Length: 514
Image (cartoon, rainbow, N blue to C red; front, side):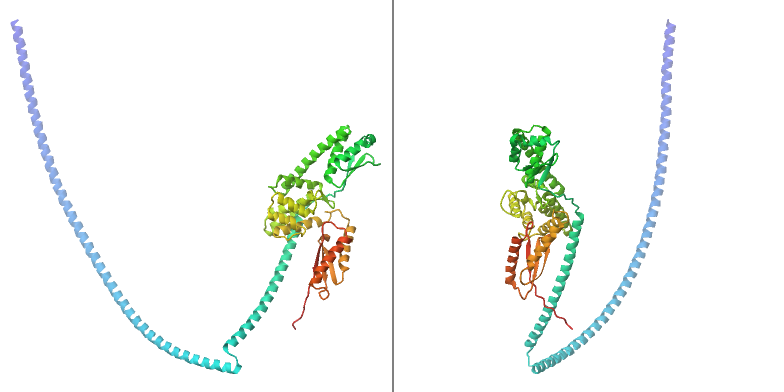
């Protein structure tokens, strides 16, 4: 046991001694490493300081070289600027010397000009003195003062100028008239060429086809009660004659005639014909005709492109579908006039829509002219005012037959379009023989008066122009002659619409310069 303890102590002692020796050894090695590191650090620092000193010296040397180089460049620039300034000074001195020479030359020229002005002034005074002497001598010779001579010259010049001015005005007027006539013919011919209208002659009778001749007896009815009821309700005459399977309706009012035709066709189709049924069918026919009238008016506004009309005006326009003038349907005529006026307005560059509106409404008075007093022109003007049409449209209606003076170009175009539509061949139902006889008789009536040299019927018989002898008929007598011609035409001639009588009295003086 004791041995074991001793051994343990010996081991422990050996361990302690070994640990201490190891510690000392490690300490000694660490100190040696630290010392070598410090020496290495000192060596590196010393080397760095040596290198930094060398670089510092190199930088100082380079800076000195740059400073030296910059000084040399500065000296060189300074020398160049000094030499340039010296050259500029020499040029300025030379220019100043040149200016001095020029100034001296100008002073000499100025002195010369002053001397010349003095000489010219003396010459002007001499010339003025001679002019006064000459003027006095001329006044003595002509026995006229200067003012009198001026007045005489001005009067002669003014007379010559007035003569030349009158000649120029006459030439310009003739040139403008020729150009205007040519332009007007071109426009009218283009308008007529671009307007292609079909025309069907209208009559005052309508024919209703019957399924058989036995239907005639049923239309007449017992003791004629059916035919009397139909005539009473429609206001037309029923002509039942020997014409096979046909009944003729006669009446001057196309609307009434159309109502009777539709009602009779409905009765024939229905087969029940008696007074009560007749009354019912006539009422249905009236409503149907009213609807057709409205549709016709709307279609007319659509065809012409005229919109914004009062609804009542549209209805009145539609009534023209059943109105004729010498066989020409008035609604078709109004549409044609609207198109013609619009074409001519477009060519002239004026208001196309105003011309179309005036053309469409120019005969609106014919829709109710049989129901009131007055011409269709005056009635149309009243209708247009009632439904608040513009004053230009009203003037177009009032002036299309010359009842009033046209105040706009569009009114003149509407009147021209109306004449074109009515006068074109085939537009109105009148035989060529009767037409020629009427125009011939119109000229004969005008020629029957004393003092008439010649006369011509123009505008399809709407106007008669009478040329009188100026030595036999004076201005006062011309007025009386126009009145007498109109009265004789009214008394002896039958004609549509109205005829304008124009008396022309002209005095011409012709001479020749040889």
